[in-house]
Length: 143
Image 1: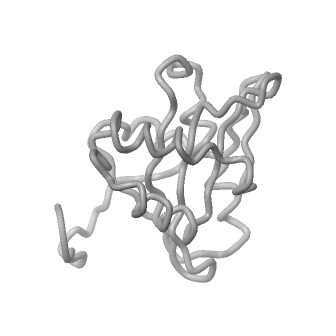
Image 2: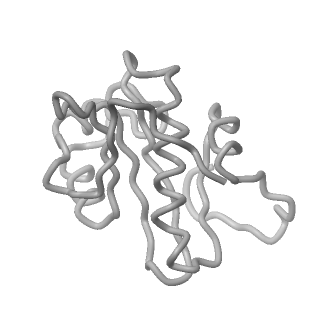
Image 3: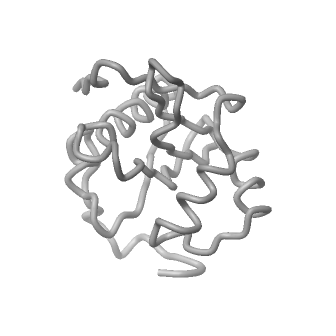
């Protein structure tokens, strides 16, 4: 299963390329899941995660972001996936999710999880499926 990144864009896991203030603004002001996240929490999350930046190749401008919390051995949680409004509808969210999948696959993880209210179709395109045995899962914290 492959998903091509549209021409003119690139994805990098280099943390030095991240526009941290921009990513924080996107998440804290424009997302439903990280609304009002304090900057210091954002910084700690970025520092302790595998980060993916989506960039316009010609300018280097950051257009998207995804974060993965993982032990790189058994488990990963994909979160904070965001594509800037002007770049939506171009297949970049799907390409970003595919890049995460492709980066994690060689690790042989037992599971990669995520939660979404409205982007099930994006993640299904790269192989994610709804939980079928929900009774074995439990949660401590917000639903």
